Amino acid sequence: MSKSEAISWYRIQEMFRFQSFHMFGIIGTAVVIGVVAVSLIKRFGVKDVDGSAILFKPKESGWRRYLFGGIIFGFGWVLTGACPGPVFVLLGQGYLVMLVVILGALSGTYVYGILRSRLPH
Amino acid sequence: MIDLIKQPWPWYISGLTISAIMLILIFFGKSFGFSSNLRTICSMMGAGRRVKFFDFDWRAQRWNLMFLTGAVIGGFISSHWLNAEAPLSLSKATIEDLAALGIRFDGELVPMELFNLDFVFTAKGLFMFLGGGFLIGFGTRYAGGCTSGHAISGLSDLQLPSLIAVIGFFIGGLIMTHLIFPLLFG
Image (tube, rainbow over the protein chains, first blue to last red):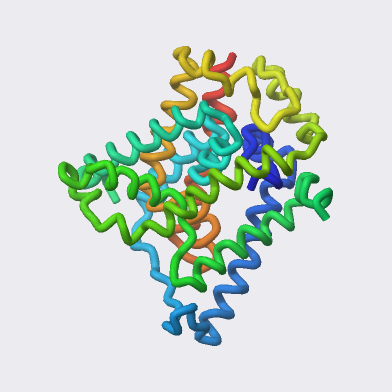
């Protein structure tokens, strides 16, 4: 992540302004390889390291939680310029500002836990 | 060899690395999803006593916390020993758009005029970082995953919910970039 600058606040701005192929290339490559690999795993019934079959758990159906939650996450993604993984990579790089982001993210997660039963899913 | 690693990586190498990470985790019977760590940490801190959502055996998620620790260490290593000397090659159009918002492109990974503790503790800074973090935490759990869980793992498995979530990520991102940033920095 560090090395491809996918953790860069600037790159996220560039992506949402459609001014560079860079981020789309990263996500696109990962998804294309992922789709091929997952379908091969399914077709050939590949086993994991313990010898048990690899199962892909389908996500719960519905659309509200995915759309609403996704939009809220998108806001946070652009504000901080980082998604959850890169927040921690940036912390490792010495950006102490990320401690504030982590504090916010933990509170957000906690508040979701409280409100969960009252939200449309 | 080390020089090759030091340069910024092209997008296809990075994409390949990300899918390799996902496949390694799948091979070890796990799945690639980073944001569930936030729930795990809440649970570790005792949130399970008050809120049922956090009442689960977080020890089963220790492997993912190791992954998180690895991310921090990876960030440290790459910035201390594998740093490219050249400034970020941001597109000219983005540099101009940001300049119009009063954000100067300084060639670093992130704008240092915003990513410093003095700015963070202003109203705008708290909104950006504490508020942004809150939206990340709330949104990922509501959507049931972030870029790794939905955009990479979910789309690889051709799951419709993940596609809806990724469309949501982009709707939110586009609104923030094009409608709210001009108000925030205008």
